[in-house]
Image (tube, rainbow, N blue to C red):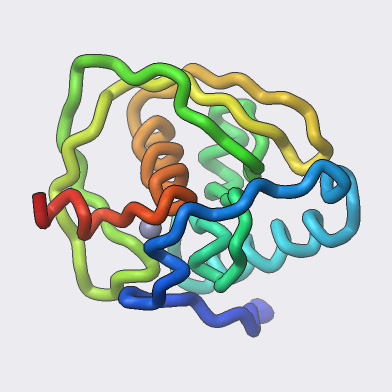
Length: 158
Ligand code: ZN
């Protein structure tokens, strides 16, 4: 038996999912609090069979998200990011079926840029720059959206 996370996920229409979140403070980097939060979020994501999870999905007002550890390893990138920013998006777009742990039972074909440039910080405070495509690009965009109060529901209703 794997240990289940005792964190509960926030679901729409919880207002924290519609809010632009606050930056992770500088003095958090490299500390216990951010490491524990990352581990708790990874566990909650695993328990829910997700591949990404943003801090507001566990009720925290922080620009912070985690991604699937295997996806991170395959791409040789960290599996948690603070204060991220998408700095470039390709004009080319395509659709992928996306779901969201905060919107149980809902999936939608979401059109997004195919390739992005992304920057942020790992939990130690190292600056990370990534060029992403494919599944990784979609996950990074989905999670960065969460930090800006945007969910896949907002796309489908446009
Ligand atoms: Zn989501």
